[in-house]
Length: 119
Length: 115
Image (cartoon, rainbow over all chains, first blue to last red; front, side):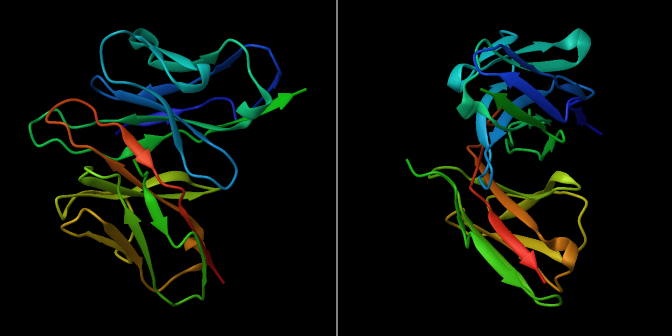
């Protein structure tokens, strides 16, 4: 069974500083990887995804993530955070469907990392 | 293009009652999945529907059920509500590609409180 670990429950970063949120996954084959962000009382917004190809993926809001197969990691980074980045961040892994039937298998989420921005 | 729409956004129910939540996927998306989010368990996959058929199911009791209509809209039902069913229920939709991963988009969720 697949699993996702986000080692940091809370992270505090000063506004303007760089950010790295860690994500480790366990999955037997090549995974589909996602980062989502959730603001209080809201749903999940997709930041970026990795399916295949270039292991460094760019997302919205200036975020990027790097897939490292050897480390089973998919860490999220941002060079300079803004106060509006304060939120809950979730890493997720999906098996996906590789046959012609398509369809989306259920995503397995990490427990989330709560990002706090200091002024 | 409208996003995933969930109704109602907030509701309060009494133990033992049943509840139905509705989800309208993004236009053109045929896969709809449901997730439960609680502080203790985090985000957990409930089930996924594609072309009116349940294709995947998470580890939830039979009190949790769902269906999908021919227009891809979906409903989930929880019968005999328990206090522990209080949660944010998220619906997600995706366009089904013939191969490869599917980007999954989430709605704002339905907040269910069981008293």
